[in-house]
Image (cartoon, one colour):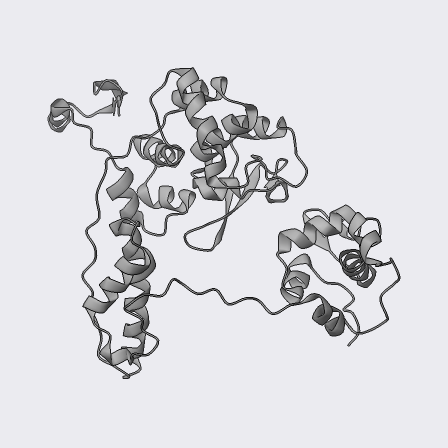
Length: 350
């Protein structure tokens, strides 16, 4: 089979077993691509250049030692080229559990064995995490089999989930934190607060995902496995535009969520502010939008929450000012409530 006239990084990545980001990075490094606006396409000669470069690194020390050269690849089909670059993936197994289901019939698995499996495989996980990664998917699989009349349906009582009150960040907190931290770390905090991005998702943002002109960023959600396009408020776009770009690193430089923990704590100590975690930025995003009157469905959509009820349960904070009941008997005027002081302010007749 001959090479297709035009292909995309995503298509080439799927055929070769690479990540799309790796394909894009190699294509840019080698100048083997065509960019039309925000879209990258690859012509047959681009594909050959990328494959040759990864197969024959003649300019490297390794190539000199191994004797590889920059000779051109033979004129073979696209599928053959892909086959040369693709290796079978290694199977990844979970730690073996005493409650091993591989030798059990589905109809013989009960709620007790499922919970025991969760405890043995994920001993250090919280109750909520055990429910999410073990109980829910296992129950879903068995109940799917039940719908096919292969076994009876099953119900598994969830592990108890601790409900800890989360403290939301505020814009003032973020500004103070930014003043005491290095540019990339400060931008990281502002980014989460103004986009509602999860900490792990923010770490994984690369410059290819950012469009400063359109003021948008593509976020790849770690929990749902989906993507969403988020808006970049003008102050955030300005901060991002002034960051130094480091080759091979993401927008915020850090490679993993835990890499910046010491720097984060040090910045809080220098700033003399309340100790908040990175996730408190996302909490602040939801809390501030709800307080400013944005409806819960819109907040859930903007922040990538699948369940609006979760937003209310987790991020909705009651105003505990008892005098708010006076609103029921006051004249029909426009009224607003300060969430800082709890005072009711009348701003004029309707």
